Image (tube, rainbow, N blue to C red; front, top):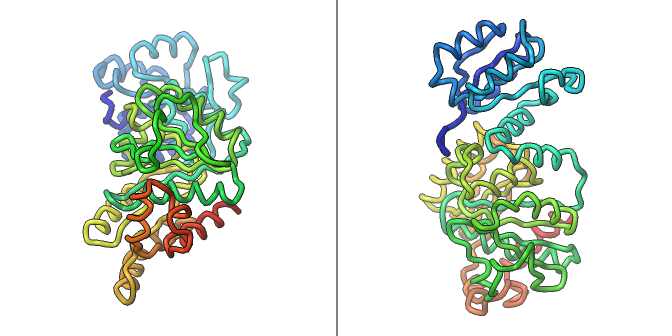
Length: 366
């Protein structure tokens, strides 16, 4: 299975209801269900005569499959990519190997199966889903380029810290990490965990060398901070990124499965709306556990801005987001902050842009 290929699936489940739920849910995500076995003999026969297809497939089975035994499952395991067992009573069916409780919802099923594709992250992700944590996690992703996604991430984090919420700002924009440069920070990459840069505000940057420790970092961070803001950069190709195993997809996957809110930011021009439509179409067919919101940045003044809002709402409302936000264009405030390598509150705390972001932060704070 290539890094970008969606998984192929074989189901081996006697219950028509359970099998239909699993197969239809995965099919709706674009995953290819290549065979649906009704007993162990038909499963073994398919694998024997379709060895090349089986080698790249994930087998999902249940203990109600006629003729199933541990020995036969172990033999099949050597001939397929992965084997996943789902059961209503995992402990009682453990004689068949490691069994997992059957998810109750489409989103939980997709999230869990994505975890198997990205193994060995599955068990850690499952533990975090069931664990109470301190932090509220907001990930900010860009629908296209030059949307102001990083500016929002930096300043929302700063405003939260001013509200006396201990906040961690994470730069996970693998294509173009820029938070350290915009704030004139050095040696962020060499820091273990995170680095404190202001009262109640810390920063971390995820690099390829650190990606294997993302799960441990997030477990520690969600227990240590009140709020976590993650700059994802562009989220184009979201559905592929949630199932591929490249290091650049690790944080995006974590936030979609375990974050509290994914904020998609767009800009109000022809290309900006085009990119937003593309991302929205992907999200519509992709199950994510995180809540979803949209922000139109750099809204124009007057009637033109009103028209931009109408078009923005037409694209985003069908996805039933938690929030839809609008931020007016304020190039002067942005340029001043960038020239001073500072946040908006430090450069000009009376600017309209700073006030808009402070309002957003107050909503997140509560």
